[in-house]
Length: 133
Image 1 (cartoon, rainbow, N blue to C red):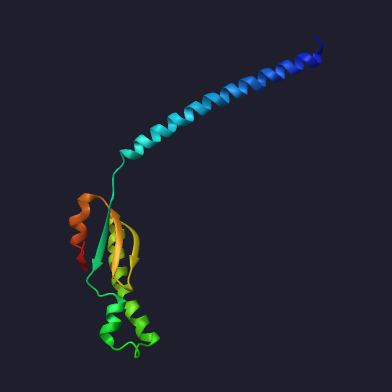
Image 2 (cartoon, rainbow, N blue to C red):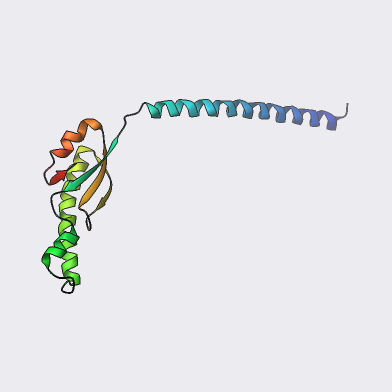
């Protein structure tokens, strides 16, 4: 046989081995995916909670302050800052406890949305400044 033909056959053999190796890796990937999925399914489950704060939302503070025509930008900013300060104190306490805050609103409803284990619900209710969980 010519040297070119031998080189071509060797190259073809290498390509076949690489394809076979790639196919074995491909089979391993779904197995790893199933293993990862089973681990994640058994991980700690978190519940989502809405923490309604005792401090009234900014909109309620504005309505209580006076008529719609008399509202200035500074009054709106002040009402928003009061609600934000109330949330920041609770947010700091939640961070210390390792509770993740996913979202919050202070204008129409002074509320914070969190993720925590079901065993921590009583702990969330006991936080100062929380009206409802």
